[in-house]
Length: 262
Image 1 (spheres, rainbow, N blue to C red):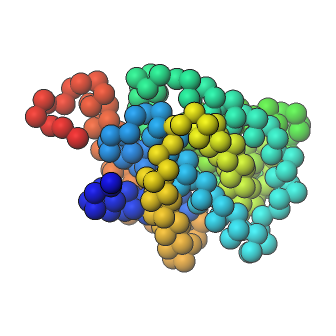
Image 2 (tube, helix red, strand yellow):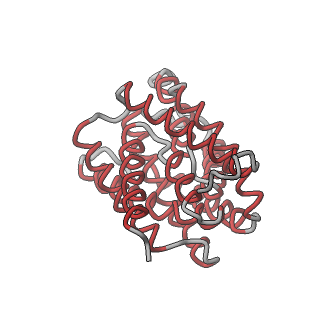
């Protein structure tokens, strides 16, 4: 039985992550460490995190379709390599020992923290209207590789999709954001099947996290435009995620004082 404090923490962080994912990205910088701090093994935390992401992406696809921004036909050409990559990445993840996965997650969280604070979406936006679509084979290979990464660990995968869709495919930022969510839904669904089959998902915690994700996404969609992140929000997420990353590293490198336990 999940305690009320734990329940509140999951919903709150899920809310913040859903909010951040909607207007900036990298909400998994917050949710993945939380799940591990709650005691879930690295492999199960990695799988459980996908439940909220899947639900959030489903809601996002519906919203973009309703606003007539999402062109599923344009995204379908990337669907197969993305799905295959997601399956392969998930298979690699479930066959990675928890101890190794802890280090992998710690390194990725630390790297993606710096990616987040350097505002990659602004750099990507400089390529809009300057490049034309590249060779389809190259685009499919990139989608496959992004799918493998996303299937393996998920954190920050939205930035990679956004870069590919703008730089390699020539989409504007609005359409790229919509396609990013669509492709995220595809590879996350594929990856989640593998995690479920290998019993790497805590369904109860995943659904609670999903509730928070959805609420945060709904609030963000009402109050802020996509890619116009308030400075105070970016500062909050940067400080919060850096704190979690440092605690994570200290804990799994056994550098925390013996009387600090979580």
